[in-house]
Amino acid sequence: MFSVSLPTCSGTDARAALEAALAQVAEESFFAVAEPAPDDWRDSLPAGSDWLEATVVFHGAGEGVLTCRLPGALARDLSSAFLGADVDDTPGGVDDMTGEVANMICGCWLTRAFPTKLFQLDGPIIRRDVEAPSADWLVHLLNGAPLGLAVSAARV
Amino acid sequence: MKALNILIVDDSAMMRRMVRRVVDLTELAIGEVHEAANGREALSVLEHHSIDAVFTDLNMPVMTGTELLRALQERPSPPPVRVVISTDGSEARRQEAEGLAVTRYLEKPLRPEVMRDVLCELADVFRD
Image 1 (cartoon, chains in turn cyan, green):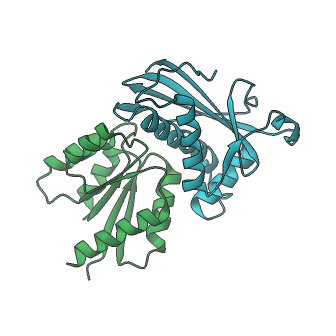
Image 2 (image 1 turned 120 degrees about the vertical axis):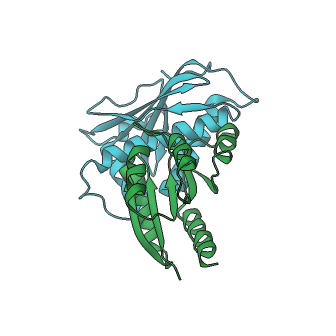
């Protein structure tokens, strides 16, 4: 699903910009380090991992979709890091955090890859109980847990 | 010293909560802290409360931050200080915000200390 054939803008590679955006969001919002996942990252997944998905549609100078998938446990950890507090008592907080993660990565990526273009981002759409990212997703480890990104750009 | 009344506008409850937490952790004279999930809710808050500073996202449903900023320019009462907090850091968006009298433009991801520094700057302005 990740398109590596996105047109480039200002000489910036779209995939490299996405990786940089993820690293920036991880570090600045969650005090986490993002590193490329090894090929066998699925082998270390706990049995019965629950996956969350947030999809952000962008349009304007270009049109496309960024999708982010992460285990529920990672979403809860990121929520706590984001607020500096336990979020177990916040109804919907983990879903909201998952959407904000996707929103920040998408906005940061578009700014990096296409700095002179104007985009609008729709509100994130959240799904629960989705599959783990497949082999064609960009997967990084955040504090040892996988986070997958996929981009489908119809026109940029 | 006048206590700052603040309005946080973001469709993400977690983002509003994070900003409110930073506000709470400062030792500045903060008065009321209000929240709104979109521009329309923000205008309703502004109708009923005296707000000194608005921290607003741009991409929001119902009424965007840009539409809110335009509406603020048309209000007869003195406008509050306007600070944008957005994932969109593009030059084009920044220029658009400049034309809407935005005092500061902050990019998400937002480090808490950046938010704290902006609050301190605003407190100094209102102290003077």
